[in-house]
Length: 343
Image (cartoon, rainbow, N blue to C red; front, side, top):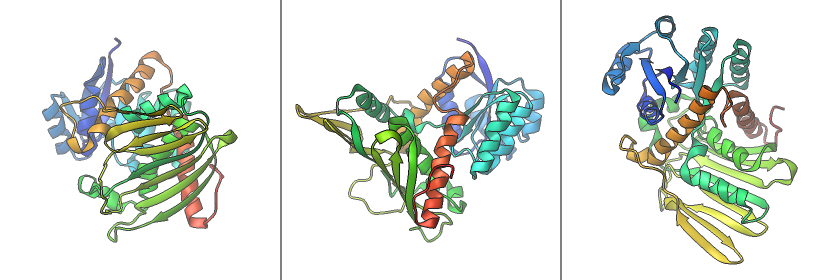
């Protein structure tokens, strides 16, 4: 397997798990960690046995020979870091959301295209084991042509404890969770023709919206898709964080991804149920185990594309389509009317 050297830029909460997942990928070699708080970069590098740590990305690019960088920072810094990598001829993998505005995201994609370097987005949600199993059932045709779908991720989990910066985002749930769920809708059913959205802010001490309901009219007769998302701190009878729950109706049956990773497919022959647990990794945080597991398969897809000079499932151009849905949802919520993506 070809070896590719990379640096992680960002040493916050998610970086530790990103780097642990990269260790599961044959051929991926982390050469350095960089964070504006150099002590934090040094601590993470020391914990993981990584040789070099930097506080300045410019210095990182001057001193290290890199095949790509994995940018694990807040979205406001994504654009400058991606452009910096492109200017050095280095490919970039960027966390979602790609950018706080559609214009910035389009500029990032254009900069990498002009520089001739790969630009991928680390969209791991679709790589969760049960969500991949849903895709297999849909592709098999067992429930026939889908005509309605619901994708739900609503939780009372205290997400702001591990990621306090989310309290300060003027736009929160649609950019944080909506990017995942709207990507899933596209993964399952293709592109959307229009978006209708309603949002709410339940937590009194945050700036952005923490609840959103999005209705997608999919292209070409594909099903209407309802995406429900939120961290409202609700008291739920059964807390499923961070599971995504799905219900899809088709002309020949239905599919349900239920709590505790149960996948139920019902047709005229009856209901077939099975659990779809992810692979287990000792480094995963138990609260996020299903999500952390998905990092590995996402990494493998991105690494394969880098090594073979091909496109992964979630490259920059593709992720722009998801972001157009996200920002159309914001416009819909503001105007009280359906919007077309990119309108």
